[in-house]
Length: 89
Image 1: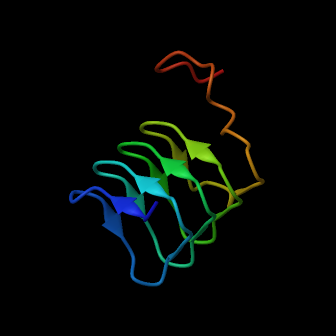
Image 2 (image 1 turned 90 degrees about the horizontal axis):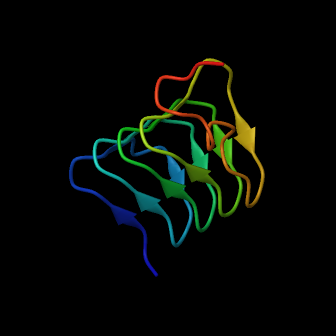
Image 3 (image 1 turned 120 degrees about the vertical axis):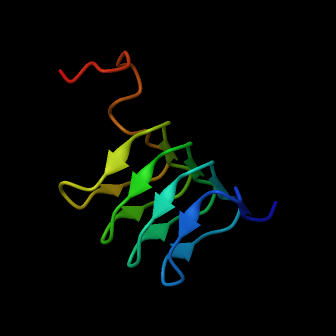
């Protein structure tokens, strides 16, 4: 399966995108980002420069990986998976 990037997503030319990656509507991928094979980037997600995602990671809708440069390993989901919208605990 090829990389699927929604037409409204913004992906920097210097970002490294693996195979079988899906990038949703209005997602923003900055430069110096590595997204591993099989990752799924949800709508409105923002992946900041310096972020490294291993294989098969999932970043949910409207999530941001930016304050601290994040490295997620294979098959992990971001730690906001079970939170309700606007729950900042």
